[in-house]
Length: 534
Image (cartoon, rainbow, N blue to C red; front, side):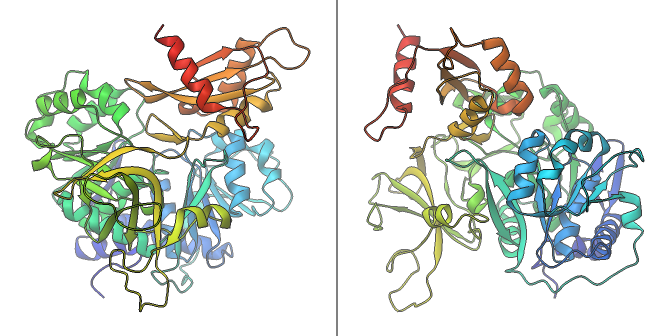
């Protein structure tokens, strides 16, 4: 076989073709493809020595670094499933993911493990913790959990992994759910490899490219920087940035040719002065995770006029769905484009029939990139992954085996030329700093503080973040008011930065209810917005 079908083969095949080419850069260090492949194979053998069984989960709680990438490709290589955990998550959220998908092996740093020690006892399936460096000998792990170092794991004897085919599980990516708890989107080798090939084809990626990995690798679009690069034989630069200016410095220093980011970062970048040399090598910039404001798009094009803009739309459940070709940006800057290669995007009515031109309907994605559902959640899977009706797309009535498609929950319209335009979401999910955040996820943290009686969270338009998170809260029973400083301190301890409320407004209770008896989030959100304009 000369073409990759499995996730780890993206590295292996490039290593076979171009072993001496640079594959991965982190700080001052760079791995060639043959070196990266050797580490992936060694990590896979190490997991085999630990007794990892087929499809068992390997959690990765790290910032972007060599070990993160090696573990992400090494776990599937041995037949396991990697579970990337956003490094911004707090200990309780990491523990939830580990419990939810029964993580067997956890890869992290000693510094992060210190924060996790109080919650590891709540992860009953965890058996091994692999640390990037040696930890103090007096650390007490829960009974039955063994501690290993990265170096020792990679020294394990070479071993053959489990049998793996392209429909086997490769990864579980956690995304915020509409009911508050994160949902694990299950992706197969086929999903991830098909996505890499599709995106690389329209971006024109090749060995000449250097891609900057600025997004978290727990994001589908962030991890895509690795898969598209490795499929193409390109180089990836791993960046953990503190300030937007750090991104510009990396673009300049590493002579980056491709940048993918979210609108909040692009808004910040567009307000800075760019070194002129960036425009000499930046070939394209791609947007994902929300609509790019026109002003930001024009500012970026002014700074790097030779770079092609790719405006994209995607969802973790189907990886990537559409892109707008750069030559169409001037004519239709508000469009999310057309379907990516090897995918079909339908716009359907409630009854499953196709909408007419410019008629609003639900965006439905079919094809090889459609994921395998939500881990352990049959109800939510049935809501989002549904059989396509006969006569829609390429489906015919004579086909007996159903085809599952992703019903996105997003309302779009398709114009007469086939270009799609985003209208809105059907659920109450908030999109802030490129992250999808559930209102109830925020509310659960607030309730756990015992500093509120009732509360409601909702999104408000924000020029930089996309949406900011606003909270309305009542005082707990027996209290004279909401202790805002204490509540804000609780949020900082238990929420990643992107989930922190931008504002908390006290209100006398009880909060209004809708006819179903639930707190009326829409009414409170509307009233709050009206108060801001009067």
